[in-house]
Length: 367
Length: 239
Image (cartoon, rainbow over all chains, first blue to last red; front, side, top):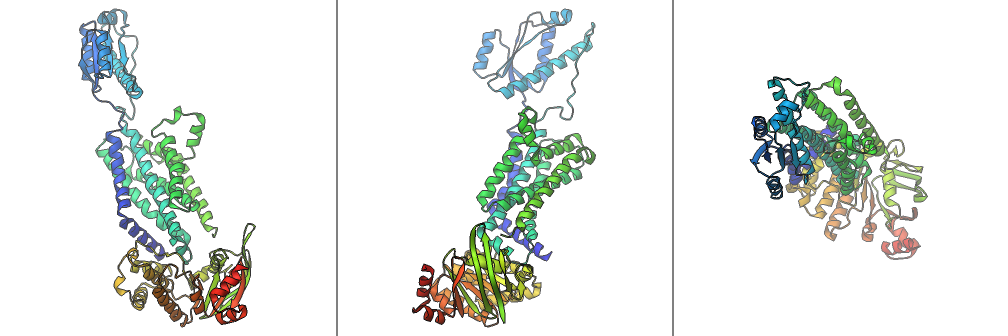
């Protein structure tokens, strides 16, 4: 045990004396979370739109008021012709235009079948489809209110309740993703690199020739990075809850336990990588290609898994990130507890056990 | 008494025979030169003797323990210093020695005394808190040697300990080796400097996995009929 403590101490000295890496490891989580939070947000506020109102009656004006009072839109112009709309699009002045036909009120009240036309700038597909959804939800609101006040009454109305993420905030998606990336970068990448570095410099051989248990050497190298990435995770959670208003509905202790289990999985993957690689470059490339890329692409963090070809959906199952993101989202957003997410936990834990036992086997092959 | 007894030791990697049926003994307190060209099988032999690598066949007793079944005990009783400098560059001199001393389970208080003692002997007391990175190569090598004998091993393996250092430091280094051997520690040293081979009590010359020659430097020179070990080496590695 004293040997393990000594190796841990040595590892912390390595980390502290390597200023640049230390700074990187500590600053990266904060930088990533702020970067994603402020820039890669898929929420749109106050999109500039134009409204061409041919009716100019009570109902059409009520609808326009509804549009501009929503947070989504800012009506910047009221053109009189469609050519003017085209011009505005070309000038890049607006992202979307709405045309209300003549007799809007009349059609609404007598035929229950009013139509409006929406023109999107689809040069950016994502923005267009998000804005379209916003229009739809404003229309629905408008419809519901109209139905309530209408004396005639409506045969039916649709009420959509956005559960768990009522404002469709993208922060709910990227926080679990960033926690995952940080844990993989710090735990798996850093520990596999430092293990490979000892192989490269020959100090590993020096250690293995001593009577110290090999497992101590490996654990001693992995634990400090687990501690660092655990602290980073806490920082990310604090920033996302207090700066980006991410909900934390589940138990915080359970959330941290979940993170620890995922960290163990990531660390065990790092161990496995370091046993098969002999140089730092090897370790880095294998972690990047074998773990980091699949995590970004196949975890459902940036790209929805459901819309991928079957083969990738199946492939995604063998990487730990997918399971962790599923679990952490449930815990943070839905407030799930152990009994809801235990299958994910079991998978992550099982992966850790498998990776650790393979790497111990490989370490034991004396060579 | 023999501290190393090697009998028919063989190591095969697939079809390649790295070490082919070697046998020799090294006496306690002896300085044994383990010579051979690059790739002759020296490092593989040392790895087997230090319990890092399982032999394919044959046996070896090191410090009285069997390399096949008692590698753990062997590790406790040997010291090792490699051709590549292998202390941690970003730790201080003291921290390096403390790390390895602790791994060998030297009690804390005693460890501190031993470290200060050996630093005093190397005349490096003032450098105790310098990063290893910042001290010259020759000093690093001496420091690595001092670290390798900190736990008072019975046998020390030195794998090209002096490669890359200047003649003065090499002389000092050999003085350290002599000093250590005189306390009964067995030294097995590999080197490519033939003048150093002359300092050894006995030497063996390996080529293609087998020991071609073994004896005192004088015996070998007489046997081959040349004046220096350098000539002996060139003659024997050539064939």
